[in-house]
Length: 177
Picture (cartoon, rainbow, N blue to C red):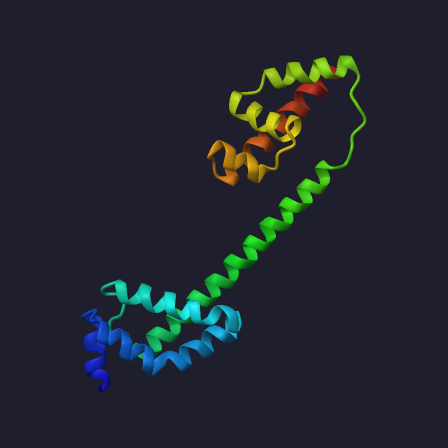
């Protein structure tokens, strides 16, 4: 199949166009993906990219360049995005481990008066903030587990915890004076 026929088949989203494009360009596409991601993830990256592009009518336009160059750019972009996503996931997991280790540090017990002050300050928090603090500190749950239990995004749980801790610190400081 010549290049013009291949492009016509690919743009028309005919299975033969996808198959021929894969056969013709796979070695180059795999090389690009391997360069960014390594061998293990390269095949998945190429497959996902080809399927995504092929399913998206109008993503490839002949006037912008060759199908080969377009597919190479798409695979490279997908590989870079995948790499970044993996690094972000790794960073989140490391932060979660650090938070769990920090929670394992045993604090000295509060005296009875201090416990009353803390309970009163907790009672003045908005219910959303109070709930995440109680789950984190009284039930020893991680923010990830809290997010799953409450069906909330992890970022929302983190924000609520941060807001609650700042508010508690202000209230307990005020009461102590």
